[in-house]
Amino acid sequence: MAGYFSFTDSQLTALLLQGDERAYAEIFERYNKLLIKHAYHLLQSGEEAGDLVQDVFLALWQKHRELVITSSISSYLYRAVRNRVFDLLSHQKVVSRYTEAIGRFMEEGNSISDANLREKELAEIIEREIAALPKKMREVFLLSRREELSYKEIGEKLNISDQTAKLQVHNAIKILKVKINSHLHMLWML
Image 1 (cartoon, rainbow, N blue to C red):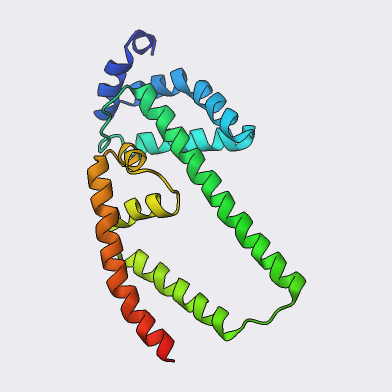
Image 2 (tube, one colour):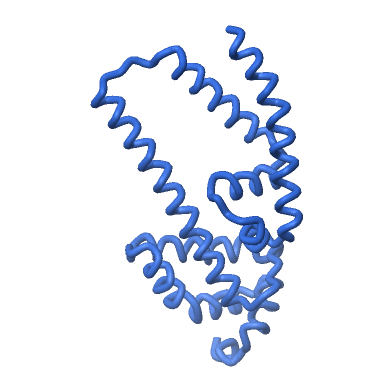
């Protein structure tokens, strides 16, 4: 692997995209520790940082043939780590909110009212309709609404223009309004 050590990042990236395992190994050697430090700085957990970076490198290899890297490999990897950190933190926030809600319910000992049942049914309908959106549209919509990313951030994360992200969100909202309104009419008639 001595020859690969002298290659530039651009050369290694080109070889990686062709499936060169030694180029991949050299990229790993160059950036693994730096990315773990970066992830640790964001997460304050060594174990989570290591796991997260390992996942990034695993995805890099598994998707090496379909990758479109428009910047440097280092920028690509740092952005991938940052996005995974944001995904992880967002997931932890959802789990925390769910745990808090269960705790409040247990403390208050309240029974579920008719309004709460309808709210739950509506939430299920919304989730089902979001899941029914075309894959790319759903992904853009969830990044916008659940992760609260800007169109520009979505564009960077998915390698699409911010206008495409905006259009996808707009179209998703139009589709969801029509589908959810029809469900609402039926739900409130019950």
